[in-house]
Image (cartoon, rainbow, N blue to C red; front, side, top):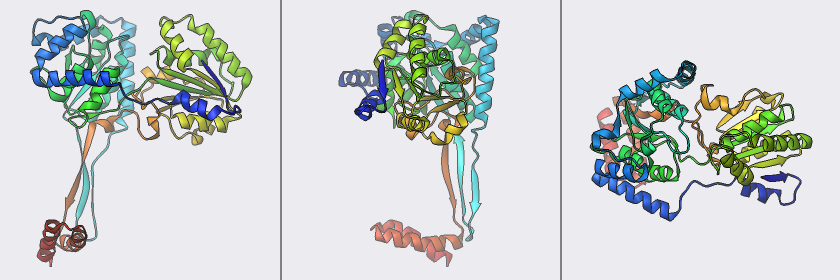
Length: 432
């Protein structure tokens, strides 16, 4: 675990090295993914069956076995403990309600010359959601990826999820039923991305692929972008907790470890301007580590990528937070809204000591699919706007065509595009 102080002479370089991370993969991974993409593109279901047997240790009899019937999802929902089902359905309702506010409508205007201009908004027809199924299963990811698509009006949602050794997580299937997923396939890894991008005999091609995955999934998404849309290239999970000392150290330790337990390369950063509070949090994290089910993963993450940073004041802490542009930012201070105007870059901002990141992961309502690796500087959480497309509307009146045609002709001639100029000139003559 790194300890930094902004008074250190080498702080800037140490801090830059700490939070720097670039999405990418090595040449061997890229070569392997390219082989998988090409095989699925050319051989379809046969390649999916082969890779499912090799990577997921699951031998399927035929292509029909690739799909998990929706009745299995409904059955999984019916078998959940009552309290668990209630929590899943309550989370779904809150997520759905929040995303209803992101709906957008088309619009039209008429200018002084009678030209009609506007924007038409339509949902995508079919999207694919990738749900991880390796070290842990995440029903919350099903809700967060599928429900905004549903709210947007997407016609068909296709879900892929790996089932290593044939093990199907009932919570994931139940979440698919709650979220209204249309079809589910037991396919994972780069081969699932390939199937969604190109289509096979069983898996339909989609317009966009969303959802997190390992380096093979991330690399495959990057390679198929252009053939289909993607949400983002997700990096390791991140949390930055900024505290003034008003929150119990134990609470903040759990908050920091809530990301560290995800993955060995997840990052948890704690920033304060209270030296005694920093020591309390450091001790609380050490104590809490022994209580985790995934302690080895969290310990490696905390030791290698975690950090405790002491700043001069709150303003300096906010400036550092903006440099990191974290996926999750907790303002664990007495007056969080006083600091909010100083925060520019963050995927999600959690205000006050009672608002832990875990609430956002599951039930608060906003999406937990967030920009990582500093990309919160220029990108946003997954939302309804990721599942719509916009078309411009232009309808010129005869008078408007004549007026605009003269302008367009002059610009086209300046660019040396004769057909453009003559096309515009023809409308100018017709409108005179």
